[in-house]
Image (cartoon, rainbow, N blue to C red; front, side):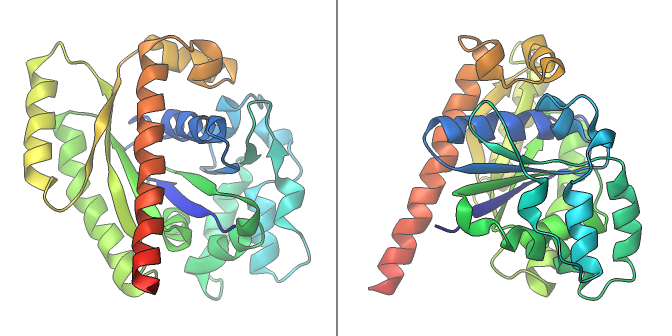
Length: 273
């Protein structure tokens, strides 16, 4: 076993990255996969969404694991991993991660520190999902360098779609300079209100504009207060509102993402023949 590592990335905040990381992760775990969620945001939003109310009180986090790697200290990544009651694991984050990003500037092989940290546990999982911070700084570059692929959550509005070009250029640069195997799994529309013509028009234009080169997931995550409530409760949407529209949408997304894994395995098998 060797995990597929997916970075959930968008430099714009408030587009549903954390919510999508939690619910895609739990969805994959419900399918029987071994899943690790990685919080790479100093705000600890993913950690809080997984029910840990005081991330700053944690003694072992992604920050301590990355600092150990930077300073060549003996500290296993496993010591920071927390098991969650919904059947998956979490590598948490807290405010200490801000200091780690500063330390990366002077580190040797600074873009690959997270890759090395996750390499210690990669063999234990089928999927590792990294919730990236809303920036294109060194921490996000580390996530892209560690990842096999990228999912881009995006709201269907003008500002979000405008920022996609910058993000796509950054992914392309990382692929050329650091991580040649990196690919884009797709763009995921979140917080979709299909009652508005504006949202429908932007989604339609995006599908037409990038659909030939970049997948736009068929699944659209509807706007719902239930998703925000679930995060406040430290639960996935499946545990909070399992029969609702958002849970149904994330279940459909999970099928799409797991199908991508099967397609990749098939293409590898065909290439080996």
